[in-house]
Structure formats: structure tokens, C-alpha cells
Length: 389
Image 1 (cartoon, rainbow, N blue to C red):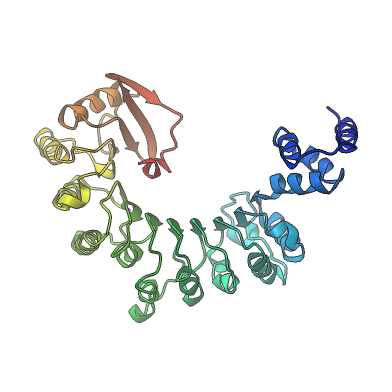
Image 2: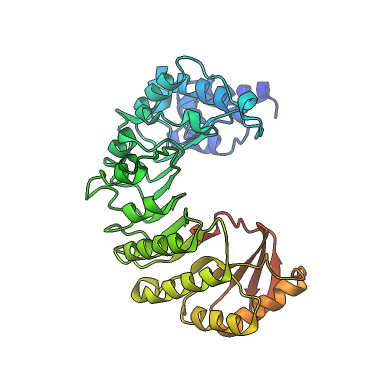
């Protein structure tokens, strides 16, 4: 159907008195955004329903797109209050490794425009702020004056008092990603001290937390119903990492909900430390009785050590998915025969497993189990799988 015929048909039908439900149904069956824009010019009722379809979920592709959309919302209240799901990007979207050349030059009023747009978009429930360059991250002040109540927040902004003040108001937030760009050599000025300034009753519904440093988890998990956690060890030396592990798990004991998903990355994986990590997970006892996802653990090559690994794993009777690193296996496991056989071995000791993720030098292979059949699963998103449980 051409734009002219679409508009002509709409104008014809609008000579009759149509119900609001009819307008809604017409718009529901229009997928093309250009056609929705055409409907906006037919009459006020079509405009209302078409604009709701156009602006309920908005995703910018780069900094220019972000600026144009935020300019629109800043000056057009009618459209701003429609938005419920907003994704903004600050970057060129090209993924260049040459930072000095690829960093986008932002307009002088870029951040003030974003700030005004966030004040106008009062009904946002899902907000994603992606920032490519850490030098652009110290802008959490744009959240000052925002009155929306989020359910999900992906935040690349630097952690500071502005961000803390904003989070103190987010009583409905249940899914949070934070990336800390505030690195200081002075221990008194670390992000962890800023995190501690959150109100004791802040984020009362937080259930899913993803953070790139365990200090954030240690501050946010206690007294909150966090059941899904993804974080990363920041220490590299074993003695320091062991202390980091001990502190993190002492805080996991203070969550008000049992864990369903636990994903802890490491900059230097070893089977010895993975055994310590797995043993610490098992010791959480009641906090992990419903644990469904666990990663990332080094699967030992040595037979007796691997049996010890399995002995610990079998105590997690609800586990449905485990992520194991096999980068040190020599020769490398063949795909799919080798990983399929190893998945079968894992299920001998942990029969509740339905999926196994094998990591080989950061390449991930998923084996799914259904009715005793082991299949290579190429459709699963391993980056977000921990959120599914």
C-alpha cells in the first residue's frame, strides 16, 4: 500500500465517526514508521494513536540521533510524556579503537538538552544510557530534577552524588546496571564510599544487579532482594582476591532473597581459585538452595581434581546452567563432540543441568539438554543468559 493510498483510505474512513478502539486497531496493524507518520497528518485521533506507537519505545543510534530526539522531547511535552522505554547513545556507533579520532564532538548544549528532555519524559520506566568514552561519563547531573520512576536502568554515567541522589528516589527499580568510571588513588574518594551514601531504604525492589566491580555489589546487595548478580573480581593476586571473595560472600549472606543467578567474571582464571569460589558458593547454604545459574568456573583438567569439582557442584541441586572455562584443555575440546561428551559428564554429577556454557579463550559454546538429547545451541545469547533464571 502506498503512502497516498494509506492516507486516502484513512481520510475516507475518518468521514465516519469511528471509535477510539478502531483507531487503535488500525495503528496496531501499521508496522512501517513512515506510514505511522503519514497517519499523524490525517486527523487528531489518528495522530494521537500513531504518536503513541512512534514514541512509546525510542532508541537512538548515536550521539546525533540522541541530541535530535532529546531536543524534540525537550520542546514537545505532548510527545515526551508518551515515552516509556528510552535508549540513548553518546558515541559514534562505529566501534573504532582510535579514541582521539572516533570520539564524537558534542554540541555545547548537548548535555543541557538531555537534562531538559529527562525532565519532560515523566513516564519512562526503562532507561538505557550508553556512553562510549569515559571522558563523557561525569554527567550524572542530567538526572537532577527527573521525576520518573524506573523499573530498569542501564547506566554508564560516573558514580557521584548526583547519581546517588537519583537512585535514592527509585523505589520501583528492580534491574540495575552500573559502570564506575570514577577511579581515584585516594581510598577516601573511591566509588565505594559514594555508594555508602545511598539511603538505607533506597532501591527496596532491586532484584537484578550488574556491576563491573565487587565493591558496588558489597554495598548494594545487603538488605535488598537481589536474586541475580553479575560482577567481576578486581584483584589479580590470589591473597587479595581471596579477601575480595570473602567480603563479597559475607555480603551475599545479607540479601533478603535467595540467589537464583550468580555470574562472577575474573581477569585471570585458575582452577585452584575456581575450586575456592565453588566451595564458597556451596557454603552459602540457604542463600543458594534455589540457585539456577552459576559462572564462570574453570573446569579442572586433572581427573581427581575434577571429581572434587563435581562433588561440590552436585550439592547445588537446583542448578540448571553452569558456565565453565576450558581454555587450558589441551588438545582443545572438539565442537560439538567434545563439549557434548563433557556436558554429559557434568550431568552425571549434577542431573538438574539443562544447559552448559563452555568458554574457550572467550569464545562461548552452549550445549542444551532436552529429554536426554544434547544439542549445540547457537541461538542463545550468552551475555544475558544469567538474567533468564
